[in-house]
Structures are given as C-alpha cells and as structure tokens.
Amino acid sequence: MPSLSELKKRIVESQLWRSMFRHEYPDTPRNRVLQIMANVWLHLHPPKIRRHAIRVRFTWCMGGITFLMFLVTLVTGVILMFYYRPVAEYAYADMKYLQYDVPFGMIMRNMHRWAAHGMVITVWLHMFRVFMTGSYKPPREFNWVIGVVLLTITLLLSFTGYLLPWDQLSIWAVTVGTNMARATPFVGSEGPFGELVGVTSRYDARAFLLGGTLVGPAALLRFYVLHCIFLPILISLLMIVHFWRVRKDGGISGPL
Amino acid sequence: MAEPKENTTLKPDAQSAGGKEPVVADRVHVWPYLVRNEFICSIIVIVILTVWSIVIDAPLEEPANPTQTPNPSKAPWYFLGLQEMLVYFDPWFAGVVLPSLIIVGLMVIPYIDINPKGNGYYTFRERPFAITTFLFGFFFLWISLIITGVFFRGPGWNLFWPWETWDPHMVIALTNVDLPEWGPLRWMGNPKIFGVELIGLVLITLYFSVAFIVYYMKRDTSDTIRQLGPVRYGIVAFLLLTMMSLPIKALLRLAFNIQYVWVTPWFNI
Image 1 (cartoon, rainbow over the protein chains, first blue to last red):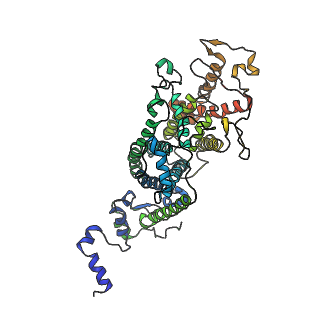
Image 2: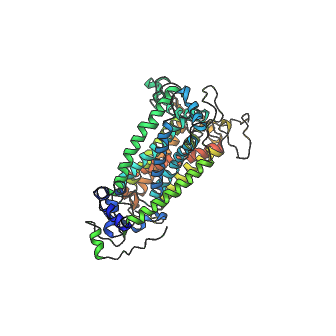
Image 3: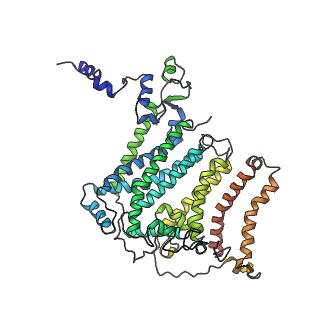
C-alpha cells in the first residue's frame, strides 16, 4: 500500500490529472492568477481587481445576482419545458399536473417565477447603483445602452412568461398589456392616424403581436416561442457583450 | 465582507504575477477575494430563493376564460406604473410613446450628461441635477406609481385603501372636464381651427417653449448650457419637460378634474 502523500503525488502527476488541471494549487501569486486565467468560467474576471470593486457596499452585488437569477430561471425553465405544452387545451392542465403530480414540479415552478420577479427587481437595483456611481460615464457609455436593452428584454421575458400558465390572471394581464399596441400611432387600429394608414383591428400592431384579434391559442404559441427561444437567445448574446465590455472598458468603475 | 488582508505594497514576485499589467498598489487578486464574495453571495441568494419557493406558492387562478373579464384587470406588477399612467394620458401616449421615451431617454443619459465628475464613486454634491432628476423619475414616477397600481387600485381602477373592501358597484361621479370647459378658461369659449382646440395648442407650445426661453436667456451666462450645446440642451429639455408632464397632468386631474389639456380630431393630450 502506498502512503497517502505518495498516492496524491501519483494522482497529481498522472497524465490524466495534468491534462485536466494545467497548474498546481498551492497559494502562490502565480497560481492565483492562473486560477482565473486558465479557467474558462472564471476568466470572465481579470486576474486582479481594484480593491474598492470587491466591496459589497460599492456594487451591492446586483449585477451578479441578476445573472444568477437568470441562470436559475434558465435551469428551472428547461425543466418546466419537459412538462408543459403551449396549446390552449393542454396548457392549464399541464400546470395542474406540474403542481400536483410531477415530483418537485411545484418548487420548480415557484423558483422559476420568484427568480423571474427577483430578476426584474435586481436589474432595476443594478441600474440604480450604476447610475448612482456614475458608472455610465466615459468610457462606459455604450455598455449602459446595452444595459438598458437588457433591462427591456428582462421585462419582455417576464411578460411573455406571464401568459403561459393560461389562467385568468395571465390571460387578462396580457390582454391589458397588449391592448396598448392597439393605440400605437400609425400602426394601431385605435391609435392616432391609424385610420389614415388604414389599419384595422384584424391587421394592426396588436394583431401582429397576438396572431389574432384576442389573446387566444395563437398568442399562447407566439409568447411561448418568444419566451423560450427568441428572447433567451437575444438576452444571452447581449449579456456576453455586456460582460465583455465591462472588461474592455477598463473593468469595474472606480475613482480615477 | 472581510477586508482583504493581502499586502498590496510592491513585492518582487507581484510583478511577475501580474504579467504585462502594470502593478498598481490598489489591486488585489480576484482569486480568492472576489470569487469568494461571489460564492458566498450566490449561496445566500439561492438559500433565500429556495426557502421562499418552499413557503410561498406561485399563483394559479381558474382556467383562462375570454368571456369573463375580471374587475380590475391588472397588468403584471412591473408594468403597473404604465397602467397607472393611463389614468392621466390616453393609451397612445401612456402605453406607447412614454414607454418608448423612457427607454430612449435612459439610453441617451451617458451622452447628455457631460459632467465628468462623479465617475465611479458615490457623490451627490458633484452632480446634484443628474441625481435629483434620476431619483425623482425612479422613485416618484416609477416605483410609487407601481405601488399605487398594486395596492391602491380596485374595481373600475378606482382608488381604495388596503383596508377598504373592493365594492365593484361603487359610484364615482365623473366630473372630469377638458381644459377649455374648465371654470376660469370657460369665458374664452372653445376656439378651434380645423377641429383643433387653440387653447390646448397654445398652452402646450408655451410649455415646451420654456426650453427656448431659458436657452436664449441663459446661454451667455450659464457654463452648463454653453458646454451642452444646442443639440444636447434640446434633448435634455425635451425629455425633462416630457417627464414633468406626467406629474403636471396628475395634479390637473386629481386636484382640478381636468381630463384633456388639448383635444384634436386625431389624438388628445
């Protein structure tokens, strides 16, 4: 029997181990940098950071928590997709099935919903913090613009998901929300100058959103596709740009 | 969070560790100091979220029924600020134009705020106008309207205190009038050209011309206006005046029962 330290040495020096972990672990400045640089997930960070930037009272952790909330909705959302069908006849029954029959279905649904609401709040607080620290000022102007788009997509993601339970709460909330599109100037049937353009309630901005004149099966399918495919891909792409630009615009903001 | 104990004075080995980056005494290693914070923060948030999800169930009401409209029908809570604006403006403005202007207005902030101070630290004294405007918009025009919409609006979108029962048959006298019919202005009659009310047109033109008057009066004396230049100043003034039109309309409505300031055949404001 080899001794424990001998065994560890044999494992750590094996070809398999060294092919996975490119550097050693002991706490040296070099390894601290390599921990970040050699790790695909952590290399989003710079190896070193300004001292004030790790203080909670400076960042409130809000950007990170928003991202965490997004990851939670992503994971729970994929699980919910296994059990949910975006068809008017099945959608509500699938919700009941999820709540009462699927193991851990209720908690998956709860976590998805509360994380989504939490994400709306944290993204507002993140914007608030960024404004208060003046972090949108040069050279970070454009990252603020991307952030505003991300905020809008977060609201749209939450709104499209709101319809999917297909209960009274969701259908009427979405009816109220999408009725606004009817009033769009020029392209809404009840909006200013809509008559001049010639749009009707069957063929205007709202009908384009809903796939019909009311929140029906077509709207459910549309919102499902937007919620599960289009908007998540869009927000992921923009998040990549957002995080990348934080680094490229000089890292997290701070007094010059 | 604990302060990092890392010695940040220059050490010979710190230079090699940083690679090409210039060694700044103010910097600490991300591993472990930042990653540790992120890790702890994630655990706390996940624990809170899990407990919350165990204790409180997401709502699920009766199946969707297009023939049965609940009263009140409320949008999701984060849009109730917009729904609340519908009380004071028509849908085309409250539901389409204002939300678009909010988004565009937020986007242009970095390009119209040319004050170089307060970049990367908390300060009120060095940027009082920017912070006051933002706080007013964020808390007074967004958060407080959401709170009103969530907690104080009942059937018929009428105001209820949380302890009052919602009475769907409550009778509210509709005493709202348009501005030209409002007492002090009634003596002028209702002069129109092509169906467009003149009083409203004049008042709104006057409202936005405040920006021009201030510009021409102050441009020689105010450093701020000179640095902004006419284009940036115009955008700031337009967005600010549009933003302030919401509390003005709310005041006119709540205090004087005035519904529209300006009526035209195509749209009302």
